[in-house]
Length: 144
Image 1 (cartoon, helix red, strand yellow):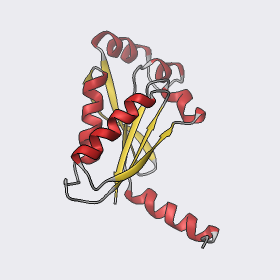
Image 2: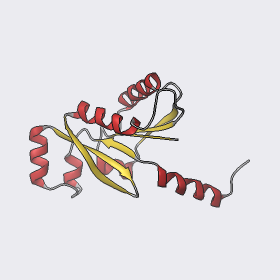
Image 3: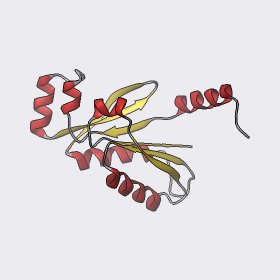
Image 4: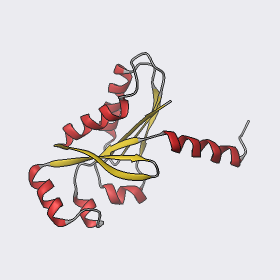
């Protein structure tokens, strides 16, 4: 049975209020090109290999943390996204990536190993968001 459109909108709106997700970037280049980061921060971040961990929630995207290197930023992303869940808990996840399917699949394998009752899917980040994140972006959200 298909849900009426107003029911779908109500469900999506309720989900949006309760979900937060985190993502990391492989490069800062698109942030500076899009005017979301100044040249000084960009050059310093590039020189020190600082990668942001960004939070999506409450209707906005914000800087949540940072780490030195892509792997460290992805580890922080993973920890933030899974902090409220236990091994025996059922929850859903969404993994999104920008042209790094293999890395997204590795993230899913880790989730399945550490949280065997979790279920979800992998999707590719669309072009309207990908133009801002650049190739190599990885996103994770976990929710009930």
